[in-house]
Length: 346
Image (cartoon, rainbow, N blue to C red):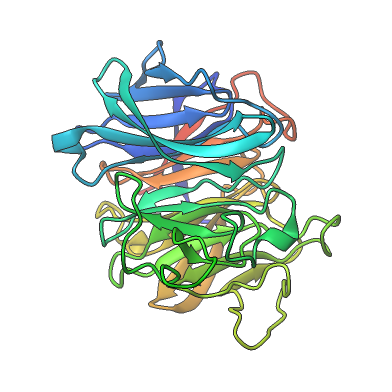
């Protein structure tokens, strides 16, 4: 039985809202995959985009994707974006901007020349408890790249806020390895967040799609320094020495997108829970955890709003979720895509 939820439409008429980031003043910044950065402030959608990223290329699953604000945003107002671009082939870059409130300025490339594709571009962005910038990269539909230490694809990357490499990254002193790498063996991780109590990084990741392995095998992983998460050597519930099996595995596929820990105090039942938005699964999965252990899962919003992409814990104590019905794979309603504000009914 699903929990009784309150659902409010915050914004509508959007085009594939891909990722959220809240600023300290309560604004919600979000990306639209065709290349726009939009703003919800005081509960209303600002009509004019904060920015249009001119060098962003929207092809297939790629476009303007990840967004993150710096931990010291109140001082420096830095916003980070990840997107697909074309430089004699599709690639992914992460760029830092300064948010003036009316536009994004002072463009600085943090990392680029990550191979991209119509699919499997990763690009979840986030600052960890250590203040470092973490970036997920997809395998660009070339599964053999994920386990190679000389390539950035199919990895989690860890950088300083200016794009330099931290000296304590695990492969800094490994010959022929890219020093930016934090973990390897990922197929296409599109969600990332840190457990508030423990500081553990959790990621959601897409499993094989038929052309590169049997369908299903979507994952939730605890992601830790220097580890190998199996792709392409193992998937689903397979195990191999020296490789990490998932904390949770989903077959049939659910299409895991964003994940977020609930950090509010409004709904005590949700405190410390992890929420995962799903595309193919068309539901929000609530994951109740005890540290590293899954206590239980619960499906919310099942088949009510179509494909779900972004999820975030808002400063007002509600969850914010976006639909992804205009991404070419959904059945959009006239007011799609939408941003929803989710709570528990009294």
